[in-house]
Length: 244
Ligand code: F6R
Image 1 (cartoon, rainbow, N blue to C red):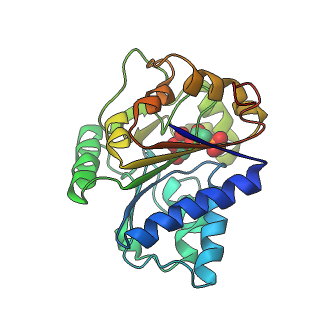
Image 2: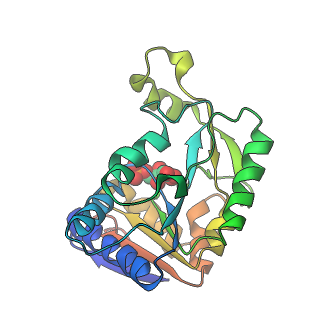
């Protein structure tokens, strides 16, 4: 595990974009595993800036996103596909047919999950996996559990997640109750894993996940075992760890 401590969120975003562009430079047809959420937005902005300056070429890049809400169409503005288009893909020279997100419209969960695992295997696995970190230690939608889910799986969202999402929808029944998420297996098989953690709210879980015991109740803790795991965290996120 390598830890890069940054002054703040902007510095974290710059450094993450540097590492991703290094990966793209070394292998122009890299498979990038991507995440949604608020943390990677700054990184995506920096990547867009690099593209606009002619410093990075995404034309051969393949992306596989971590997760998608079950039941949401790609054009729903709450879907993760919509998020990725808006925050990255619409602004760079990536071929959108090479960008993959689990199929939220596939009602057959087993089929959706098997197809996504087959897709990841078919593109040769993930070169670099970008991750955020849930305050409960989740990565993707792999929530604290009694074992690490290996394959792409369908998760029931917790009531607190459903409540938090309510404000984005007209009716409560429209709020997705489930999501498809890549499992821990595909994440651990990625050549490089880059996890971003920013802000004081992440400080307790950064300490627990990366300086504590490895256990499925803290899914991100398994990354301590990864052969090439890079944690980029800002001073606030590291404020409770031995590196504070
Ligand atoms: C997003 C994802 C989630 C987020 C995590 C942190 O695709 O899989 O695990 O990375 O919930 O979210 P933020 O960055 O909003 O704190």
